[in-house]
Amino acid sequence: MLFGAFVSVVSCGVSYLSPPVNPQMVEQSRHPKDVLERGYLVHQQKCAKCHGYEDPANYDVDELTDEILPTMARKSKLGLADEKAVTAYLLAARQVPRPDAATR
Image: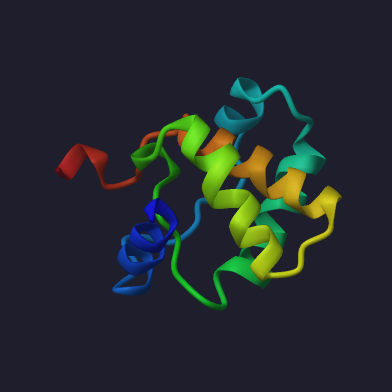
């Protein structure tokens, strides 16, 4: 049920574009920059073609890693390496404030 709500919210409109990998993400992630960049590219190629970027900070880590991402990876037919890269990217992006956070 949670997954349906996620897709509904995301597909209704793009809140903002996926942030590219930046030094802050790399510093705060336990994954190397190349894995984060792969996750960003896969997200842009696979995920963003169906729906816009939803701020991963809006969801608990467990929701993302145990429910949402595995379901979406199956739907988009991601291989395990790409699923792990997207997960690493979104978890890193989760740590970075939204660009419009200061204006909220």
